[in-house]
Image (cartoon, rainbow, N blue to C red):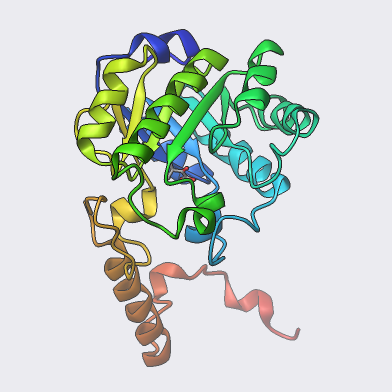
Length: 269
Ligand code: KIV
């Protein structure tokens, strides 16, 4: 996909591939693999920074990691999350977006929840905004934890209404997280912007996965909705153990890893 909001919008009805990346090497590999878009999500807090949830993630941290990801994937559409409370007012959201777009080189920002007025203000100011409904981790405790959202008729209707309100506010795309597949299908049919699902079934316009869930790092967390394509956690652990054993047994470094010189030059030193 071309690196533009227009191309993203026009991918409605297709199968957009999005993955998170928080650093240069991962973003480089994601671009080489031909993904359509990279998300520098605030899942950074859980999978890279070791926090219990996403709320401690700062704007500085997202800017820092988004800039690194951009250096690794200059041709790929890159979306960065506004961290918790950076979107509490339009003023704060505007200055946070300015940093993400100008300093980090993001193409768009993503905001969680039905923050219609803030999102409308950002769009009017020229900021490309991606919405995020369903399970919104920044406010998971208000939603009763990390649970599927929209399971009864009333909350399903609320989610659909919120999706339509975000579309009206001008979002160019919408992430649907942990929403029952039939509801995600209905929302996808009713909005004109692409929907990107995570734990939302196969009938959205695209999918996003957290990179670390996809490759199994560190390996002890297995969300039901994520498919694991690699047991990298296990491979990395085995490689580190082999390295430790080699050092302790005197097998590393071997002569081929060392630099030689004329030892005569050292005489009398
Ligand atoms: O932060 C993140 O990685 C996200 C995805 C789970 C959609 O918001």
